[in-house]
Length: 336
Image (tube, rainbow, N blue to C red):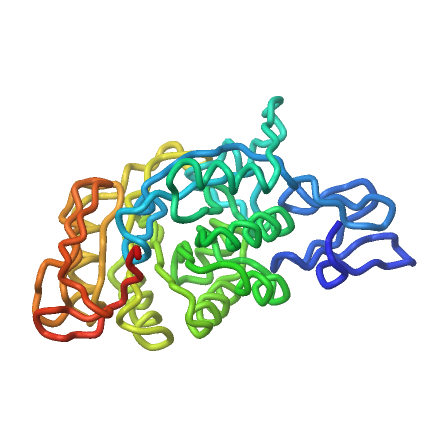
């Protein structure tokens, strides 16, 4: 069951208002909300996702993608089922949208996840693959146990959590990669069935909390890849966050309800990177394409961290989070 802060009952209609994400679903008796994981059982909100997982993997942390948080380390990655958005281009639609067609689902308890992470040599646990917000109870219990063992906690999220759950989530998550899908409200309405303003406000709150933040923008041909769209997204980061926030432009492929779209043009990604750097972003990377994703000092150009795919090498050029060569303040959290 959820804590009272995450649901409200109505004695007149017997509906339950779920407050775990910004859909704020009003759920009828014996039915689930949009994510398919929270059910109204006798007027109480029951969490169907607790301890149920779709994926358990040991990943390079760069795969999240996080390039500035414990670079070169391993992260124990946990995924579940369902999502609070319905993106037409979903890259993980089998577990996020078609979960009811999967007959076999693994179960694992929080203690076992922590044990697996430690025995695998991981420095962190990542809630990823599907939207972690809808697994709040499971993620929180596991994460609090993990932090006792000095494991860091990562959320790879669409940023559509409710205000109530974000406040609590900030108490146990150390780093976020938020998928900022577009800077267009129309894109969010048509493609994701969601409200852009919610995502932007949550991103600002995460940044202002002091938690480590990186952003990913999946570029889709003719949907969110115009120079104007990309420029406005960059401006949001510069004006509302900071130039030090890493931005990952990623290549989209035809999936789910966009089976006929062409993979994002590599030229589009390269142009987006060039524009972001020209406008003043300090760290910009490309995903799903072969490219130089090394980290350089934004002041003097010194090579700081070398990457070949997911193989990462810290060159020892960062000391007390400053470039040893020029003294520039940097945005990295390195392994101890």
